[in-house]
Image: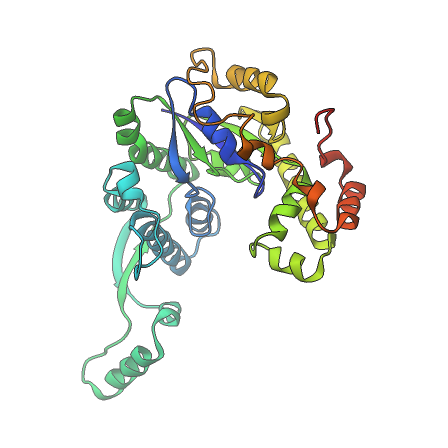
Length: 337
């Protein structure tokens, strides 16, 4: 099974490239983002606790956090329901059963134990009741619970993770008649080497975008520090954030020479469509061809055109000038722009 992860730094236009890749024969895309490798309590965090920063209580908590995270990914969501990603339905697998198998394969043993750390998550009322029972009962009631002991080697963790990922997608690939699956945001652009190691065969497309358009997008939404931008109308925090992410990403790309990586700009998909298609075609492989052109992404559409050069209509052009002055190498230039 082959994977292509399209990644960005937030609001860079990765979803447009995901839609484009779906136009190639033998290629399908998982609906929505797939972030299990890089999210907090995901695979990278689990590996850190089980392999590199081991403690017998810490590894138990890391496994439970991973299971809890996967329960969120597995479940459906809706009115009066907890947040969920509905991976069980999207992948047509028993997501939690495969997760349990993965954890079982990594676990040396389980036992009934206790730690003060387990008590931090219970309610004040339950903690009070537990203390009363312990004080007045002839039995030693406490917060004993199932605990995991797991200390896999680095190689075993990677092997089991790859098997886990392949098992999650095997039914999806078979039902859709595809051999290449596109994943949006599966790999961290600032931790490429680690997060890509959980996939057996993976290529990465990194999408960037004019920082002035990213700023304009953030200013329209109360996400990340969008509210801060709206309040202060300042580029200082944004410029610092932008530079730090790119700096970390470039350093990681240098260390990931064995991983096929293609860097592209969102704007090229609109202003240099033909050449961009050629680059994508060469990157995905000679056995793929652009079979369904314009089916999912049309560079001439109103949606595409409205999402480039947004900064030109921003109310405070002084801020745009500051971004250009501090981030000139990231600002898009073209005769069409």
